Image (tube, rainbow, N blue to C red; front, side, top):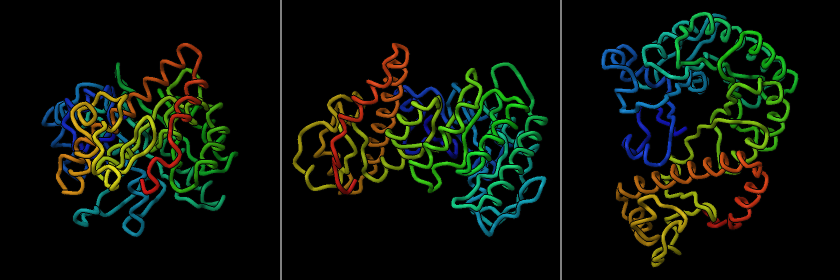
Length: 343
């Protein structure tokens, strides 16, 4: 899923996002409730019409953003009270409020309200956080208004502690959701700990439900997580990297600010059909970033999302013919070791 936190995939109009092959985008409840506001979005026809996206939209509940507010929030058994990072105004999120906000957005996939456990966390803190998230998951399920074509996902928590993850999965299965997300990862624990947590967690999630790894990640993270049974991903990396001159290509990551590209007439990625690669050279992209022209981030964001969607299409095709392991090996082998050391 391309990340459109505030109702827009940064630097990309909606028709350009569609042109990359993106089928579903992600919005964020925390940011949208603060600006422009759920009531305004509802009056204007819902998030689909508001951002010109007729396809599926998943809205994160805002638990991760609230966690990052540190001293600006206070958590209690029923929800969280916090101050806006924009103007300091006070707001309240409970499971019921969170479900109502996402109803007003007309979110295709609604996420339960959870507490994203910070890392590192002691076992005791992680346990208390997980149990709170499970209480909120049940309250979210009770407040969610089911309708055809829409769904609610539960979120597995428990930090990197295997027994907490298993307890969380069990609690969510008892409640029953349309899909299951693995949250609380990619928060500083490192790839090895993330993958070992998935090894424990994913086998317990129902095989007939979508399995979504939140906030992940790099192409290598995605290949490793798919190997472990994950179906869905979102991450800011493609757009954030595009704004900072980093390009994900079939041969590895390239930093277009590097002087080595100043006179390079080759396309960024010969295998890619995006506008950055079809119509421009590496030298031109280098020039755009060196000159601080806004077209640079636009083109590189377009390219990165195109690359990620191409990777996902390749993964789906390989799975369908039973060749995923070979596909993953070929993909990794094509990445040049440190294509750009500073990328």
